[in-house]
Length: 291
Image 1 (cartoon, rainbow, N blue to C red):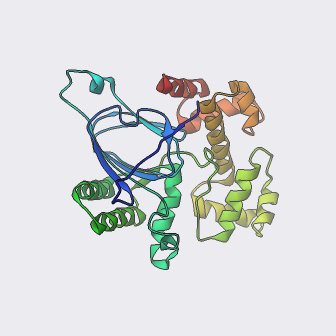
Image 2 (cartoon, rainbow, N blue to C red):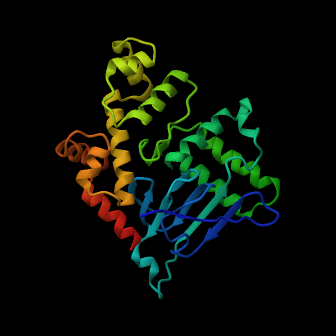
């Protein structure tokens, strides 16, 4: 199942789009777009598909969906009834990563904002005070004009940048996009792992690449990611398996080996451990989404 490219248009006097919808079928398909999307569910509930994550969404939720990341918000059936007076309400801003110019995010003052946009490529759910603050800013953006809209967007992204109340949605293995870090060493580890996860990467091999001893590597990686390197590799493999399941090109036992697992029992165990679903259940939910 391939996501469809959605063309997002802004007004002739606008550099990015801000819109308010009151119907459940807006963007009613598995889709992606080059623009980053900041979305607030003012009213409504249903199931959200972001990359390879499947979760429920509800009134008040705020999401930041990165460029090219496939996603779909499927509202509950009750919102599609013709006589339903309880209509959903959604506010969303769509903006290109470089709509403010090629050099804007390269400014040292905007380093945190650039990191947020990079992280949004996995999808981000906001919680706590950050969710409330960004929802309020989006509401102001609906009513604002001119340069005030740009200032409000920067304010929203800065709120996310300096917050601890954020949760990544899609796995790091789904799109093979590592998160940008100030640390060259961790970036080298990420890039090599994403390029070679189908092979049996040995601890000595990855430690040598990082130019540290195996024991030092284990401590270093755990301190930077809060997980072991073996767990990190498993997450990459499961994320890649999710992508293959969504694309529906291989039978489940085939994609087990294509994802870098050595046996099906191991694949099934870790897949359910990480996603909370069996591979077949995961695939069925995505197939039902498209129907």
